[in-house]
Image (cartoon, rainbow, N blue to C red):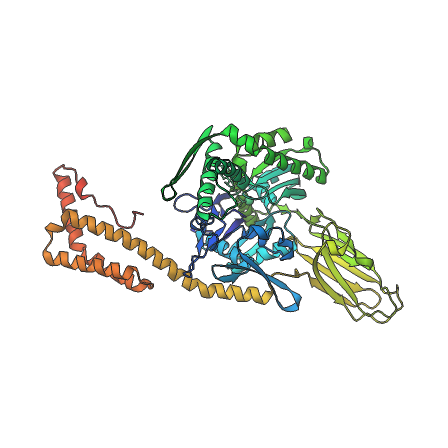
Length: 614
Ligand code: ADP
Ligand code: MG
């Protein structure tokens, strides 16, 4: 039984899905028990795409063909990414689309992709692991603005998902812990992921959730702990971390993360580098105390952000009733201690911190599809929304941290005589001047009958819906002229582009499937060949010579088909091998049975089944 509705945590570092069964949320795990899919993609150049762990393994060694942290690019403009660009080893291009829209493209592996398409590849992998679910709730950080939420929704659609709702990550985490069952209360959610930190303050009242405030640092996370360890080792080794030695960097990073993770459970761990081709051999023990000294300043910075969040929410630390830890990096014991110290209470850690957001998203998906009907969720507007008025000043209609759905209306008038149209420029941001805020879109209310200046009455209404998406409407009261637009971000994908990408992904589905099939068949062939060779060595002399010859021929056929690009001949060759080896298998089976009857150990004839060896 596969779930049709899932919750997805589309993370900067890791992504995963969860679903509700028998009223209980569970994460989707693969055969090895792993739930996290690293949010990394690799384009090796042969047309295939690696998603997740295999891509992460190559992230630093092959930076040209790999991409990670796509989430940082979602719904952003080139100008907004100015600070990030030096950190991204890819060409990022902004292309003009119709209606003055701009679309961001990333060049990787010799092709261009939009951030939405790249995120869709991760979502598709997560979706596939969940048995191809068709409906999903996807989470985003509470501070994501309209364009970033829209981009996330579009990525879901490209991945073939019906996105039921975009939900804030802290809200999902609180839901996973069932905190909605409290009658009243204030919850602090501390989320330290791979590269980002957020602290959100939520209020609950009679099953209603409201995000009061959110604060954080988009450049602070568990990866900084890795870098602190890497810096120590680099000093020991006398290597320059800024040098473009991709392979060495990959080794150092993998080791650093491993050591960090071990130190969450053990008092000490060894950092080992063994690169014979460079004559580099290095060992160093790190103690937990050492790591704690290295990362204490970073943790202090997160606590300062928590205090700001409390202040923004207008609550004191003593008023907080529950604290929830989210993000893999909160497994670090020092993080737990310091958070407990700050809030003066034990944080919730019963659920895995890197799974709790997906679990909560699954609960929300369940609520939306009727599994639970007793909940209403409220989120907040992350940045103030307003329109430009005379002199380039932004008049804010909806303030930052207002609960959604939110509605606000203000009346404006015309500036000059006989003005028949007013242009409405919508901005997002906290600053006073339009040039310092982010333009969300503009539209013109035309058809106002000629009137003296100051005579027209233009009512502008802002409505932010439950998904955080903004609709602006304007109506001239005296003439009844009105207009309404859903504010499409001034960049990002158009409806047609999304449609095209959805179709394209259906087109590619076949090619993707063929590629996967070929890989699976090649692996199967490896196993069968090994198994047959073992069998020949053990019992080959007990079958007729023609039988042996047939097997040798079948082996050669499999080998020849293995390197081909078409799965069909390989499948046929494998079928041929199976037929040719039947007498051998029977011979071996007889030997095992008679050995067992005689009470002898049939060890030398062990019949390992093909395909299970990996
Ligand atoms: P994101 O929300 O950014 O996608 P996660 O919540 O999955 O990411 O957190 C990933 C971070 O958590 C990484 O830096 C990873 O090394 C770190 N992490 C995972 N497990 C542990 C652990 N046991 N101890 C310390 N850090 C850990
Ligand atoms: Mg996360």
